[in-house]
Length: 114
Length: 109
Image (cartoon, rainbow over all chains, first blue to last red):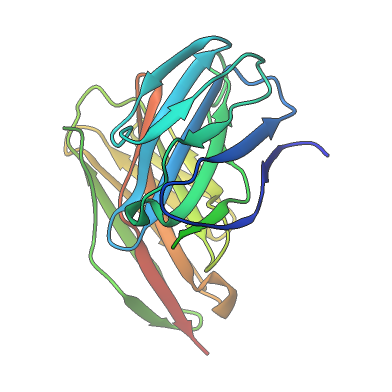
């Protein structure tokens, strides 16, 4: 399927466990992003990546780790999940350079940490 | 800190009316501006992008940009119940995107 996919779509875990959220895009967009969305805060950037093996922190990176070994994949890992990380997580991508640089979103992962 | 502010909601309009959504941003270096629609439980969906001062029309939607005032707006003409959603303003500065907290719109049949 073309576009951005995220897995799992729903996840329930316990405090202290490691969780990895997957993101895959088929457009070969250079940039990829992870956001979390919480009531009252809108979309907040966790990490982003400009290309394979290049990542950088966003607004709320603490407690999260990312990697990007391939252009199409950008997994987000919660090393030791906390209840404050209960949220909806969106992956997004865009291609920098030329034309209109819209950002496109995946369907989201709803994560609950008990 | 780069900020994007949207007019507080919720906003309710009758079917067929014009809905007006507003957004201001703090960074004068911002170069691209977007409006996303987000239905409850779904991901944001791009509906309009605007890059230069003035108006841009697409069907029932018109985006307006005034860089001097650091202001972006979205007008929805002939509002339909299916337009009921949260609208997110986004601003691109460099290679990052900054979002407002959204304005909830309800179109009353």
